[in-house]
Length: 256
Image (tube, rainbow, N blue to C red; front, side, top):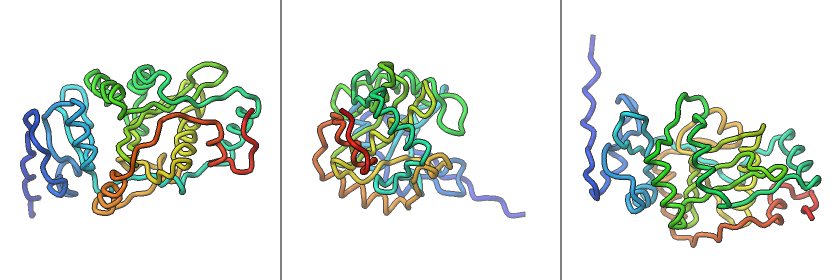
């Protein structure tokens, strides 16, 4: 019986050390495909360098910081976003009744802490540890991380947070306190991005839930080509205008 070849050693990063080339990430036959390195620190400069190279952190309690560059990469083209009929009807109804608003960065820390209590779709436990909350809050204060919030009847009902570098948006996590509230926030993000001609949300990992919303996998080389181009585009002003709803509800009258 032929044994599988031993895995390549995983690089250990010292604080401030550059990331290895993403092409050296573990592959399909390795224990954790897409894993690139461990160690380093979660400071703003390291995180910005990581995202600029198509790398993201993801780890659990008791583990060092783990850095990933998955292949394939799950992305959502904003033009391909699927607004299913039931969600469209609910969105239209809430807007017409003036019960629903999207706000950006009204309460980032509340959003990320709510996300920290929400497991990723199909997974158990949280990956948003206290060090992650602190690091991304610092990114928010630096104008790089943003929250998109769904407010229903005057209360924060759900939302998401993301990273923005140039014209690239990296989706991180979502939460809901009311049914479909995170999806309504995603509708708001898509409307905002279409209005600013931003074409792509990095979803990082492939799931059936994301696929149902229109996301699809691309190879790492294709993703990196898109990333390189989008990083050259100026970042938008992160403020939501209700007129943006025309980007996802083109036949609806804008809310008063």
